Structures are given as C-alpha cells and as structure tokens.
Amino acid sequence: MTNAYISGTGFHVPPDVVTNDDLIRRFGVDTTHEWIVQRTGIEQRRFAEAGVGTSDMALEAARSALAQAGLRPQDLDLIVFATLSPEHAFPGSGVYLQRKLGLTDGDEPKFVPALDVRNQCSGFLYGLSTAVAHVRAGMARHVLLVGAETHSAALDLSTEGRTVSSLFGDGAGAVVVSATDEDRGVRGVWLGADGRFAEVLCQKVWDIRQRPFIAKNPDRSGTVPPDMLWATMDGKVVFKHAVAAMVGSLMRACADQRIDLADIDLFFFHQANLRINQFIAQQLGVPEDRVPHNIERYGNTTAATLPILLAEAAQSGRLRPGMKIALVAFGSGFTWGAAIVDW
Ligand code: UT7
Image (cartoon, rainbow, N blue to C red):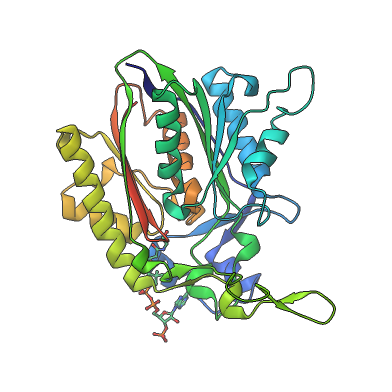
C-alpha cells in the first residue's frame, strides 16, 4: 500500500516583531502585557509589511519545504493552500503561489492544480487529509500543503477590537506530502465540524443574501459596517468547545489507531491560546515537555500554526524520524481535527 509521509517542512515569518507593548505604543490599543500573557501566553507576534501578501510568505515557506524534500516545484502534482486571509475574495491564493513558484513560465511550465482550503484554524488538518487522500489514491506523488495568514491587514487594532486583535499574527508554514512504500507517515486524519456555532467566531465582511451584497454608495464604492468588517468572537464559548473537541478528536484518533497517549512522543496543538493547550495537557495527563509551543513568539497564525510548529521542531532536532506525533486543531466553524503521524 502507498503511504503518505511528510518529506519536507519549512516556514516563514515576517521580520517585524510586534510586542504586547507595541500594541499600546504603535497602535494605541488600551491593553496591558500582563492581561495578554496571563490569558493567552502571547508575548509578541509578527506583522507583515504593506505590499506583502499571504502567497508571498507562503512562497518562502514552500521553498524551504521543497529544498528539504530535495524537490523542485516541477515535481509537485498538487498545491493545497489553507488560509482565511487570501489575497482577494477570488481567486484563491493557491494560484498566486503556483505562479510565484515559477510553475507557469520558463522552459518547464507545469500547470499543477491549486486548491484553496477554507477551514480557518483547522485548515492545515483539512488540507492534510486532502493531500494524504490524493497520495494514497495514486493521484499525486508530491503535494505541497501550505498554511499561511496575513492577519495584520484585517485586524481591528483599536481598543474596541482588542479581544480579537491582540491574539493574531502573520506567518506561513509548508510541508510536502509524498508517496512512500515504507511503513510510515500519516496514519490518519480525523475531522469534525459543528455548524451550529458558525457565528460564534466569524468575519462576515459581506452578506450575499443582501442586494447588493455590500451597501452601495452613489459613487459605486461600498460601505461595510464595523460589525461586518471585523472578526467577532465569543471567546469563552470558543475556549470551552476548543478543549472538548480537541480532547475528543485526539482520543478518537488514538482509539482508531489502537494506541495510548503514552505512545505519542510529541503533541502538536493548534496555537490559539497557551492556556487552552495547558488545560488539555493537564486533563489528559500529558507532560508539558511533550507539548511544543511557540505562541509566545508568533501569536495565533490560524492555518499556519501547525506547519510552523512542525518546521521549527524539525529544524531544531526536537522532532526526529521514528517519532510518533499527534496534530490537533480547533477553530471557526466550529471545525476541528486530529492526525497521527509516524515521522
Ligand atoms: O483559533 C481559535 C481562536 N480563538 C480562541 O481559541 C480563543 C479562545 N478564547 C480565549 O482565548 C479567551 O476567551 C480570550 C483570551 C479571547 C479572552 O479572555 P476572557 O477571559 O474570556 O476575556 P473576556 O473576553 O471575557 O473579557 C474580559 C474583559 C473584558 O472587559 P470587561 O467587559 O470585563 O470590562 C474585555 O473588554 O477583558 C477585556 N479585554 C481586554 N483587556 C485588556 C479583552 N481583551 C483585552 C485585551 N486587553 N487585549
């Protein structure tokens, strides 16, 4: 049987470090370093400069992942791009990345399919299930899977918006999912969703049921009211459901694989809130030294948290071949998922 394994990882974060104090000094948000650290563990995040888009950061991450896998862009059979902050409403960021990888010009153009995944903080795991399914079905030998976000462009960096805007940062992570005959790789991805909570964490921007979808001004421009323009969240509801769904999907994955938590060397949890992850680890009796985190440095980068965390762990040597790892995520939708990987 053909298995799907992760043959390369890479990440990119923009150089501008925005500390919690910078939110106050540079953006005038009424907050404190202590409030943010106490509730979330976040100390700083990165913001991309104007002119840099989601596919630009994805390109850097993708290049590193391809180099690590020893592949050229032309070796790819599919691009899967997970993001909630694509360049535009359409087309998706996948085609921009394909073009920037040089796949559409030069001596060797290759018009590989490019698929955008819109599952927010669970986007990387939804994308992983798609990549793995393509590889196992023999439809692709190498899939580039990217999670990337430019949140800074769409954050309400004001006191009114602080509950959401103090949490998020920009960045990109990428993996290459490749075919192998070896007995290793992604053992499975277990996904879930509950649309009853679709409005608990959302950024609507427009309402397609309205005619027109955005209120039209006499000069043909549009006006979006603040409650539609910016992301809104009921943090306490998200927190509670995140803990339950992440624990539930991890336990379901373990049961399906007939493994115990003790068999798992490292737990890669979505980086939305350090306290959520500490709470889960505590509930499950997992020692904290088996739960890598970087939220203190990058904040919540949504679809990018897991691939950035994987790439950092692989680069530092903490994540080594032969290890069994779990990936777990939860986010807007609600959507969630877990994956078990023999690295
Ligand atoms: O990827 C999935 C995405 N999201 C999550 O996983 C988030 C899950 N939820 C959480 O992490 C927490 O609910 C938050 C960290 C977002 C918020 O913590 P909380 O303890 O639930 O705070 P709250 O929203 O109930 O707000 C408590 C107070 C409010 O003031 P009042 O109304 O009590 O006067 C807020 O206005 O804290 C205030 N507040 C802040 N104060 C300083 C909210 N944000 C800030 C801030 N700085 N950044």
